Image (cartoon, rainbow, N blue to C red; front, side, top):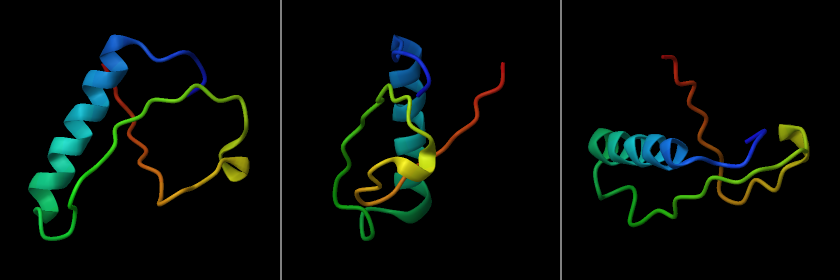
Length: 59
């Protein structure tokens, strides 16, 4: 994120997690760790770990 996470950011990522679990089921995802991280690096320089999830929220 380009700023410190707010409570609504954690609510949004929780909604993404719910959608992913409902779309693919527990057979493909055994567990997840929700993180909202403030970072100033460009996405190409970030540690990818097991992947990224990107969601654009429009109001």
